[in-house]
Amino acid sequence: MIKVYCYSRCSTCKKALKWLDEKGIAHEDLDIKTAHPDEKTLRSLYNLSGLPLKRFFNTNGIPYREMGLSKKLPDMTEDEQLALLATDGMLVKRPLLIGDGFVLTGFKEEEWAQKLL
Figure: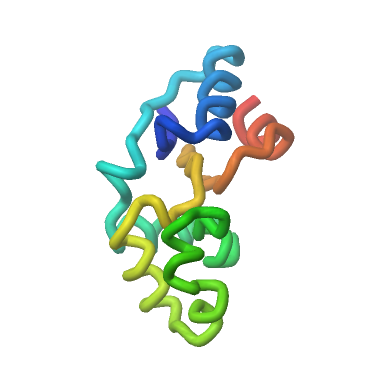
């Protein structure tokens, strides 16, 4: 079964979960704010994804902007970035979809359909 880290007040997450339900795709929902992935899990997901680490950051979120991460991330190591991501689920791009052998960040219907249908 796929896992989806979401935030209940996020409209994109709601849209993604509705899409999954409409397609009849079973999924486990995890609250990214209260049950966010730890550093070890994030490292594993990052390595599995093949995506740039920046794609794991919620660049539109308030914590990202308040911390000035757009200026700080380029000078941080991967280890530092992963440790930072693990401190606050609201820093993580959502929804975060974890399937059998793949990870997707954000909701792009075409991308999800390619992996799930």
